[in-house]
Amino acid sequence: MVTCHKTLQYLNAFVRMYGADAVEAASAAMSGEAAFYGLQPVDSDLHAFAAHQSLLKAYEKLQRAKAAFWAK
Image (cartoon, rainbow, N blue to C red):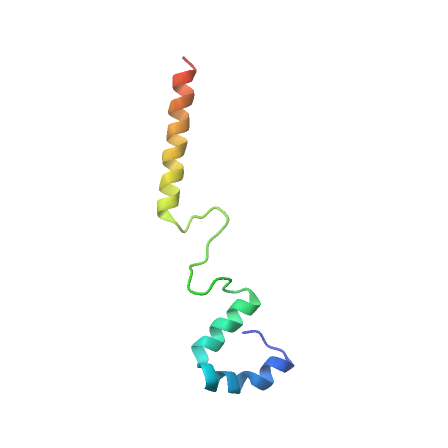
């Protein structure tokens, strides 16, 4: 959770107004822990997306087949 003097003095009020879950989500977004609310974190290679990885493998296979065909 993002903590500094200014946020701490309002924390209890925010929790009462919005609920602890919403305050935690906002804090995570502000600190960069969860950049996009509700979305799973991913790395730069998109390993978390199986369908994307499958498409990349199919594309690589296609490129190898094209290279083999045109090399003849």
